[in-house]
Length: 444
Image 1 (cartoon, rainbow, N blue to C red):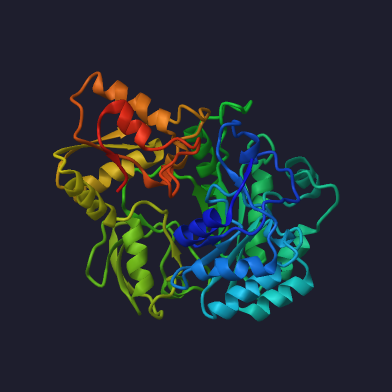
Image 2 (cartoon, rainbow, N blue to C red):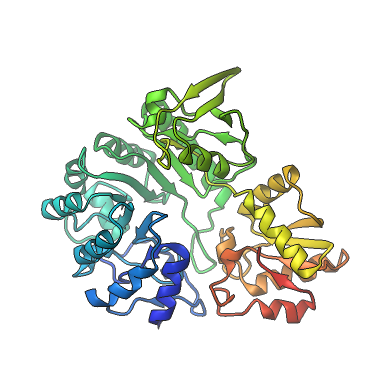
């Protein structure tokens, strides 16, 4: 595994507002994606960095967006951030530079203690996302590889009314029974967590598991439906199979403006201040930006108008699944004009296919188009996301398409497939697709 240089780290920080700090971890989780990565995958480890090294890097963080630490949303392998010897010092640097920007830290919680909690409270604006995964020690031994009891129950309870936090877990059906999930969600709600994220495990061809992603989702959904009847805490399944762009409320954070106004799980938001939105993302953004927005919601068969009392640029407190931003169509039209294209082939993943089709039905691009699903052939298994598509996957799908249809003038691909140098996870350039297919290829 290569070591990321400073330029790569800075570019990652600038593009994502995610600050990687360490690649070491204190668990050996059975679901860890890095165990399943084929050797050719191009990912990077963080170099050992001192506090002074971060002074320059944090200049590239934006105060206009939440700053995130500990999320492996880039090609830099992120470990357990609390392992960094200067963890609190790094947070203090950020807070000195950006006094009012929320900082979200994803951690497994093993190293949380009273001293650290108090320091985080002093910094202010710290949000924790705790990867709990299981609560019984025997399960934590099996799933996380722990050698001694880290007393996660006590640590979660200690956070109540002190730090804003959410919980998450990877649902491994062979290891976590429904009773384990219920126990974990109950503990998180009683400890004051705002929400729970239930991640479905992805398996590449290197895994022994043959679990189908849709079947996993259906089984997880059945568990979540039972939980919603017993618990108020929102439990969100990721990834979700989104069939439409309707803004259905998946959960409401207790004590939030939406909660206090009477918004309920299952409400469908029809408009905000009399103006409808095309997607869930647009709905949430509008509610976030406005002060005291008035929502028209459909509850069963009744339309109800509800005002959420909140300040501008503050979360409303309801949770929607993340779908797609309607501004994508503007970006598409820009790319179409740049290439002078009349016929465009949009190639995307199975998880994104329906969202893209639904968006184009209500806001058509300025061209003739077709949406083509691309299978994750390289990673195989049950992988269905755009971020793990490769150049070769695209070439194979495009060639099969063009054996039956006329070639397009332009192929547009998901930007998440590529890094800032337009290389896929194997280090292959987008230019290879153009050279192979003899068709312009771009990202909107």
